[in-house]
Image (cartoon, rainbow, N blue to C red):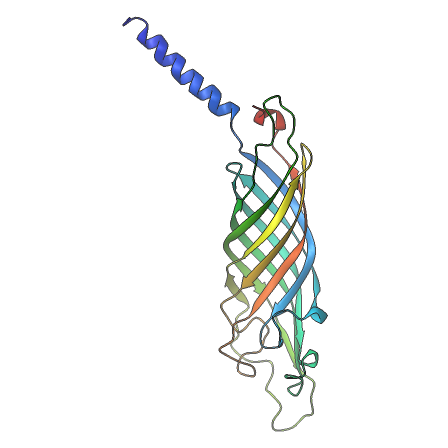
Length: 234
């Protein structure tokens, strides 16, 4: 019996390793987002002003730790803008702004209905799952605020001095993804970006210093699986 013990131990670990490898669901993917951006802040009465919708786009790299959890690093870019003329409440001020934005971020994702990508026979599983995400990021902006009212002593002084052009943010949101082929995943995503600052639109003292600025990214996503699908078959 003692002579069999080492063999049994080796067999146990070999079997455990084999089963673990067969059930492994980790894989890499990369893709891009094509969509729209919008803004909420001093130069917007409502949370989202449809007249100020701008194009947005970006690249991302995602690593799947399991069928339910993944991490994503991304680089997104686009433009945001606002104009008092859109609001019957704010149009007396005659202020507007526009800026390009560049966002670097990293988020964790929970794929609520995630499944194994392959069946026991190695056939790819088509499935659709919603997901939630949240993380940290950094945005670079250079807002150009303008006053287009009548000149005079009551005209605001622009540009304001001492405003920031880099902003820490917390990207949070939700999406849905459809795993349709061995190498291809498509989806849609909507995310909120609070920047914890009133400087994003270039208007601080001339607006509401106590009201923080936000912006939003929404769009379609297309991902390409980089890992060899053969490695993840059961």
